[in-house]
Length: 265
Image (cartoon, rainbow, N blue to C red):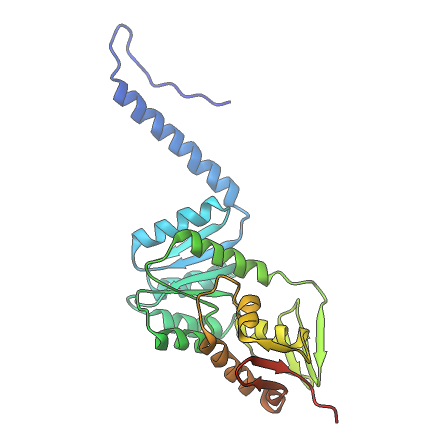
């Protein structure tokens, strides 16, 4: 075990507060080095917020859980880091930022990646939430929020990204490669957001079954998601549009929810 001693002149009184301060610095250094080693190969998360205190708070909670957190103070810096690092597993993104706001960052990321995105905002307006989902945001949390809840959302979202290699679902010309996160219709690929992909996967896995909005929220948005039916309806509308003619296979059950059913020819 490596030890360090504070040099003290012989026959001189030592100021106890100085000793304690010196010791705390040494402990802090060792803790930082230990955490660096622990997170070297950890899952990378990009935290984007123009408030330094907010970034530090989130980083501290996520680092304790073993994640490696990269920080960006504005949208442009976030884009630079995202494309430089390549292997970022999740993005936590504030809306209101200088140079490039959160909406623009989402648009740029979604051009090339389906990485899960959690959007943070001080606003608590339905329109902002719907816009975020339309652009491809996977989770939406309003400030102020509990860091523990944020960590729980991060863990749940990352857990749902781990899929079984080679798993494939097929129905009525729709082919879903679960492990590869790819969907094709009659051999032609379509571009789905992460949440749209999960929603279609849940529908196809429960073909022919009537699914309540509550069960969809529980399974696709996680049981602790504080949303409502309009969130589901917005995603279903966009999913139907992307599926084209196959979108009619998602049937609305009025007053209940939805059912995915392929009509026999």
